Image 1 (spheres, rainbow, N blue to C red):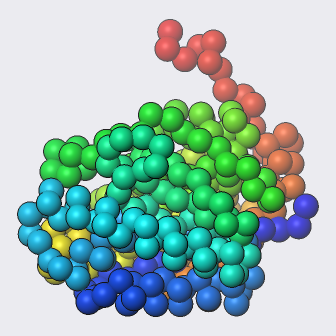
Image 2: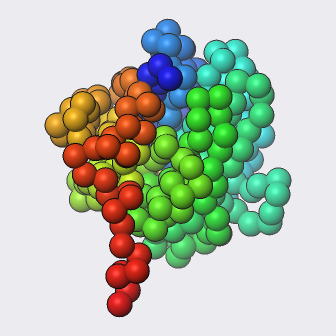
Length: 286
């Protein structure tokens, strides 16, 4: 199997005055992804909160619930872009209602070239998401079939739980996408370091990205620390630090990296070490 090119967007959060401005900014990044031949393009978690700057409301609960008014337009935009560019787009996450269940979720959408879409709700919610936004949590980790193999979306805080990634890897996922949004260096490094750990433990690839910039009139989005990276296990023939490519921290840009699934599978079976095969569930928990 040839290498798969993955793109990841460091999306700049800046005030806008219309949905059309949001669409123009998003579409420009998708065009770059298409120009560079990306098969998958990842946007960050909560990047649609940029839309809250159109009509600012400093009440966090009221503001986040108003975001659902843009759900239909968001879906229409990325459905069109995925079809036009024959690309799988993991369109970050968006807070809104779902067609399949009641409640309000921080959910990632996978838009496919054939016009279909699938959803992964965030399972582990942060204190802000639970207490201030009063969001509902997902209760399942899904694996999605694509023409390039099985993938999973593990949203920000979810990547910090090894059990979450074990669940999707047991179901066959080899490419993991982690849309993230962190507002300080500590949060950024929690997600980044655990993304590295998940590649080593499970011998998979993780693409991670985050928001950059700031929204001075949107509560909890006043600060963003982000850097995209395409990560692989630390084993020959991959780079020693397990980084295929990474962006310039806190700059708006799109990065790309090629991941060879056949090499991933080879090191899982015959690598220097085989963490996925050498697990000892008979010992853990004793």
